[in-house]
Length: 639
Ligand SMILES: Cc1cc2nc3c(=O)[nH]c(=O)nc-3n(C[C@H](O)[C@H](O)[C@H](O)COP(=O)(O)OP(=O)(O)OC[C@H]3O[C@@H](n4cnc5c(N)ncnc54)[C@H](O)[C@@H]3O)c2cc1C
Image: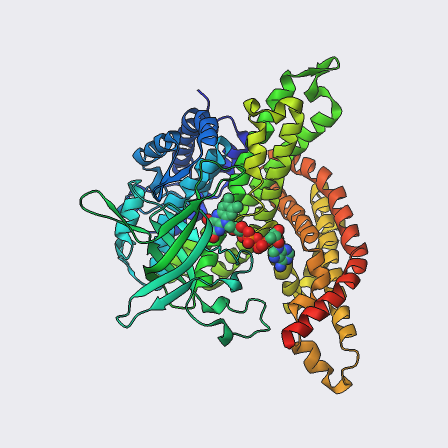
């Protein structure tokens, strides 16, 4: 029987050896779990069993239905969405196996599995079909979000002695999702507001009786035919915010849980919001992408008003890790399809996998997938550690020494890696799907072989959950502002990297340290350029006013233009360095990982040198061209 977990040694490495289950187990899951593994060995065994069971399910039940789902797609009839029958068959199996509750606490009908295991499932499912995976994530992911939000706002009662969840605000909604009767979705995008969330216009209004409603239109909502919508809406006026803040208006947003229909006792459905349309799209045909109209629709505020952006970031952090694993699943499918085809297809006296260029493509794809998986597992481990520690704190568990500092450390690691993963995995999904098609030659262009579906499915990865450009801006901003806030730490890290690049005993460690030193020098050049541009902009300002103008008068749109121009290149370089650092750490614990690190370095080193050169030697011409237009915009804005 086909099994997508058993046939994947790199993925198996993480479940059976690579992940430090002990650290996670020590913190415990939310809720009381009498069936929790009592030792790391037991955890490894249990999680391997679950992953093997799921690996077989996706290979045998999901993958064979993917082409039919792609052909049938979804359609809107009389205001309701009609899904392909194959989707219904798959989702009834997932519900029967309780997989919509994989990571929920036992007392809420769940299996209390770690987030890392949940994402192993995400990857496996995505290898079979990304649109099935996307719809699946809006079940357990949303149920878990409901619980997390409720704990954070203090509407969940937890027994401090056992950790058991005694009551939670969204218990009924969670139960409906677990049974497969409902699912959630995330409503952010509007016709005039995508990347620019400060432009969101959907309104949340409070009536005299203290009830909230939302009014507005949300578009491109994945699984938007779901019952439970997390809607981000404006409750405070943007004008109250600082107009110079690039995120002006974000503080005026609040998060709501909005049911879009009510199931009546007689089996009928009363709609509270309408599905305006279901998009016809290039790929992801199993997943519904809907436009939803809210017209004074009853809504439930989550947390406090004005906290919407913060809540949304929590949802999006997990979702971005999810897209990372989703992209890796697609890459894995592309690499395997290409490899198997190339091993069979003869050309000029040998199979095409023996031709140097094709062999090089396949080798690079395999190496990149393993590097991406290392990044994804590392980021998720730290995100999960941070969330478990935070929940323990909120749940009133016993005080743990240095808890805050530990949470901050894990958060920092997760925050550093998440945009790098989202960026690189999504871009690689597109690159690998295209390579897979190319390796198939003319056959790749035909539906029969499955390669063209991967290209269509992959193209959305760099767009949703924050585009590649937005991920790059986030990574750049975090990196450079880190240096500006704490230059001493930067100096120390640069000195350490230089020292290790010469003095480390392990030659692989020296090579990783050299890459780190290169990355740090590029960061320094961006900061130096930013500061010198700023100093130049003070021409004409009286000398006595320089300190105030320099320290306070920063305009991110203008002063960071050089860094913004190179943000994507910097992100690519940061991602390469992060992958190498993580693989070095793995190689220290498990020497058999050295071969992967060596393969990764062989490709990362010349790429990083090229990126560094591009960042340090280009951009001035274009910025000079853009400057007058920017000045015009500013002048218009100040009128
Ligand atoms: C299939 C699909 C499913 C989706 N699912 C959901 C969902 O479930 N929920 C939801 O809320 N939304 C969803 N979206 C919407 C998606 O998140 C947005 O499309 C995305 O955030 C980009 O916004 P936009 O389309 O308005 O593009 P724009 O924001 O207009 O961007 C256009 C281009 O400009 C670039 N750009 C924008 N600003 C900058 C900048 N400052 N610097 C450099 N480049 C910039 C972008 O990177 C992009 O390349 C989905 C979209 C698709 C296609």
